[in-house]
Amino acid sequence: MRSLLVFDGAMGSLLYERGVFVMQNFEQLNVTRPDIVSKIHEDYVAAGAQVIETNTYGANAFRLDRHGLGDQVRAYNVAGAQLARRAAGEDVWVAGSIGPSGLVPGVATKMELDLAFATFAEQAAALVEGGADLLIIETFRHLEELRIAFEAARQATPATPIIASMTFDPSETVADGSSAEQVALTLREWGADAIGVNCGDGPQIALTIAERMRVAGLPLCVQPNAGLPRTVDGRLLYMATPEYFDVFARRTIQIGATMVGGCCGTTPEHVKWMAKSGRMLADKRTTVAMTTPVATAEVTPLLEPTPRAERSAFAAKIAAGKFVVSVEVNPAPGLDASKALQGAKMLLDHGVDIVNVADAPRAMARMSNMAFCALLLERYGIQPIMHVCGRDRNLLGQMAHLLGAHALGIRNLVIITGDPPKVGDYPEATAVYDLDAIGLLQMASNMNRGVDPAGKPLSGGKTSFLLATGLEPGAADLDKEIYRLERKKAAGAELIMTQPIFQTDLLENVLRRIEHLGLPVLVGVLPLVSHKNAEFLHNEVPGMQIPAEIRERMRKTPGGEAARKEGVQIAREMLFVVRDRVQGAYLMPPLGRYELALEVLDGLKR
Image 1 (cartoon, helix red, strand yellow):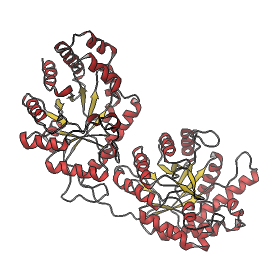
Image 2 (cartoon, rainbow, N blue to C red; image 1 turned 135 degrees about the horizontal axis):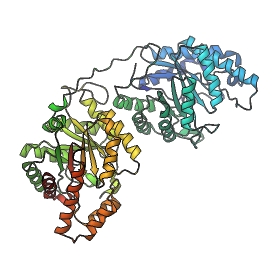
Image 3 (tube, helix red, strand yellow; image 1 turned 180 degrees about the vertical axis):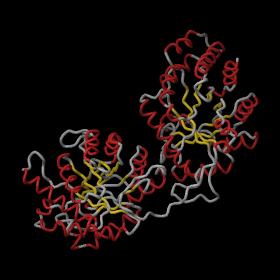
Image 4 (cartoon, helix red, strand yellow; image 1 turned 90 degrees about the horizontal axis):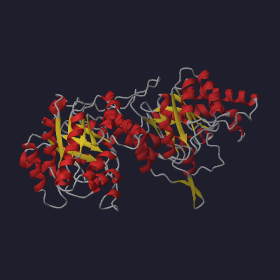
């Protein structure tokens, strides 16, 4: 049993890259040049592949006949499986690769289709004879031909797991017009052990199709090409870089795929980057079952996380089910943080439970929030919530950031993806996004179990973070937002802090839809200060929806103090309606006017 399987990359394009002439039959090399085939297998294993595919994609009678080798089906498949088996050793699985015959159902005669069944059956039996642990029927464009290959393989090797993988057109359909959902459900009906998408136009379309194929509820294998090939100096080259496949792998793992790898144009370097993502993001609570027993590599044992109530005073209140109030406090741009520090102390002196510090919100540069949190701890003993976003730090930087925060005594985190630089004062700044919120949560959750992103034990034990995450009740695509929230919980989220909301009916709907997650919720509250403020938030801030009647109330209110009081009253009304449905409030007073937060709370108490 393994949580996530990383497959190898291309065989054919790599043989070409290493000097094999394109007119040479690549499957024949299993017998005539086993050294070059074995070296590719070994390179993939060294790169971190947990499953390597045999060099037998075209080893059926129809394709071999083109080279006068149609009588070598068994020989080439047995030899191909044996080469992969030797390179795999005991810790890596061997997948016997079966590609299409080249026949077109509806055009091919019944005799040809019967011959196809026979050659697929011969190929499957020979692969298992040579040592394959499973079979992957891949790169088929016609469902009917895949059915023939699948039934032949199942009949010839009834105990062998089979992955059925198809190639989709840019229109996201296969040759007969079937959609990704239809393909997935059909393959499940036929009895495939796992399903997948491979080859095609590259990672982006493969990721889109994979997400749609999840409807079948089967283990999912995603192996795209390295983009479309381009001719450079007379050679066909694939342009998607290994680093890009790292991003692809992370996103694919996050949508729930349990197997990732590469097809045409990918290399051991691509696999190395995907394997790194696999080690970092694989959900240890999900496993992929293969019926063939295979020895597994040694895995660092996970520690039990610190009980939630023992991680911080704030975490103890959450664990006890108390209604809590957090107020966002951020230092102004520049060197002087005194006003924000004094504001934080004033808030806690007046009964606020905790303050939280954003990570360059709206992509505006200011003092590092970890430095400000350290000042809160040092000067006033205030234990804050520190925001962590994926925008500004790469994977190594995020790891260092979290370790540093824990060393300083920071125990409460809210993990978000972060606003892109283009919305801030420095639009030319480069966004990193090595990890989004889901990836960051997985990293922090693993650290709470004593494991770093590479799967190695943390020196000194484990971290003890309380892990919160964000939710946009007003998101344009609420279904996607809730799906991502489900993924965040699976990655380790323990608390939800929403964006500001002004529509109680919208919040009630969202609360009903996320009730199954069982996570405590702090509802976002932002007191308006003017009609202009309300219009800006509604029209220019993503995820913010302020109803027309609220904006009209602010429009009719005279400016200045009257508008401020009306904004506080609106916030009180919203919070009063939902206070019994949530575990707390997350107040965001605008422009550092922390007294507004206290006015909202005072009205709530009265």
